[in-house]
Amino acid sequence: MTKEVRDALEAERRFRILNYVLSSRKIAAELRDFAIPKSTFYRWKAAYEKEGKAGLFRKKPVAKSYPGQIPKEHVEKILELRSQYHLGPQRILIQPASRDLPVSEVIDLHYCIAHLLSLFF
Image (cartoon, rainbow, N blue to C red; front, side, top):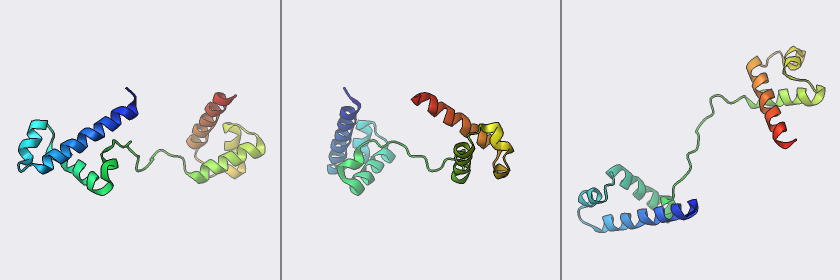
């Protein structure tokens, strides 16, 4: 069974449970019978009301921030120095144009670039 089929079946299961429990007078008792926490049920209900049946599908988690990410300006500057002068991380660090770049970012980005190049060449 593929992942897409499993996700569709799970969404259908949630939809049926949602409809059955909402049509019942005793929501708490029905949820106990299905062994579903109230918080999960109401999260499904809110997603269904907001997005319809598509809201019942499992969504991938999305990171809100990337605390260890190298700033875009630094990446652009390092790439510019690499392409303009064809230098490695040690030489980039001694260039006058790179005085404001942290050492760790230059070296981390160098190894990322080297890894990407090794994948393609």
